[in-house]
Image (cartoon, rainbow, N blue to C red; front, top):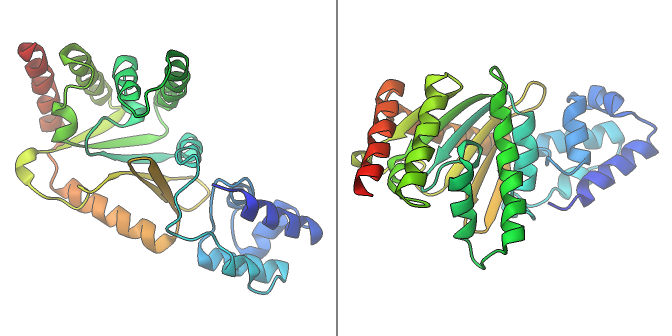
Length: 264
């Protein structure tokens, strides 16, 4: 995402002689939210932009020149990755593959190798290191609270081969048994459900509004407009209502891991 908007906001704040905290107090926002907007990690809602305009006496410039809601994020996952590191609660939905934060090294390497155009060994290693760093948020036993809602498709596709897939599923089982991640499976026989068109990540924070991130082929979007985030949260909750309970989901993961090895 281009940071032109955030840089312009910072310029207006500096010109007004305000600190981030002073602007936040006047606009009825948090300082960290202001900081994220200026750094290009967040886009304010239209109402926030109007409050910033009033606080800075900039007419309706900030509200009028908001980046378009349907614009794809350039370097599309970077903004979401930074937000992921700050979140106190993360709820993932995976349609066709295991979410990055839960991936084992072998599974992640197989995913990275399947892209087009093919990546070099050096680039694959670089991307792998970056992906595995994300999983370090799970080393903290308290925060963030992570839920993973997995379509059964993601469990049965043998990414990297039977052994890699079995190891990946058992890795998730261990995270679930350790109560580090709450896992739920959406079974095949459910048929259609509200999330079947893309993957989705919902994130909550201690001192800023929640966001959502959706992703498709070569495109990703951070959503922070309150109405959009609320709709995506509702879709997630509806799908979760049809998912298998925790213990039953872990049993499905174990059984599917054994099936992968048996088919080997």
